[in-house]
Image 1 (cartoon, rainbow, N blue to C red):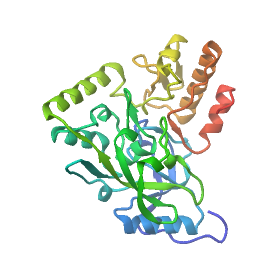
Image 2 (image 1 turned 90 degrees about the horizontal axis):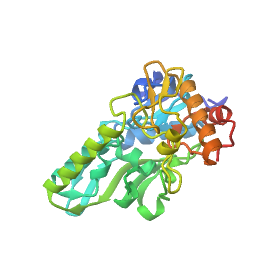
Image 3 (image 1 turned 60 degrees about the vertical axis):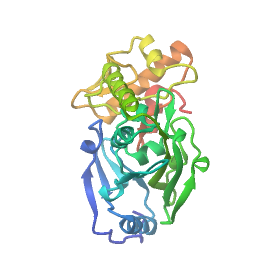
Length: 315
């Protein structure tokens, strides 16, 4: 915290909270500050404190697409609590809080006869996290169903933003902006869904869950797809073609089931994962001339560590 900027945090902000078990990778050190706002008043107070003390903040949902440094984060990690996890279904779609489980909402919508979320059921994210990264699968993306998003800025101002202003692109959105005095938080989303036969939707949903269990290390400690798919190619196929399935660094391993997944075999560190990612990038680039770009969110200094590990300029 900058000199002269000391100020007591709100009572629901805690210090030195371990983050490893808050992520699906089970990797990472503690957060300097960890905040769990239960409503908009709490969230506004936290952001006011963050602004006054000139700290960076970052959002932690279900921790399913991120890698946290082993030494932790010198930042305020905000995790929206249950007060942001409600949802309701209406005539033309759904409204859901940013902390709502995406799979839970997909199942509820399908059962009620609202189509558009079946392919998203296997993505272990919150709705807010899915919007932030424009999560998707098999051609379906969040941008296809988002009508508008309710945001709160770093300055504590909130309001609705139409989907066309969210800067959605492949696995990104305007919510990726970070830094002191920057960043926005998704607190609620309005989704446009289409009425269909519930039995048909539930059948598609079950098929998607079955497909994921057969093709991905679903029960292992992973963080989902590590790299984005290059244009007209699949990252997993490029990695597999380099003979990297089963490649191990420390306790991190390229999955033998899907090469675009890295598995924590039990004691993997962020250093292990980044070193393995660097090896993958280097060998794919040498074999195919393609620089794989991380889909996995690398927090803290990890992007610089990846560049060092790969020997390649990250773009």
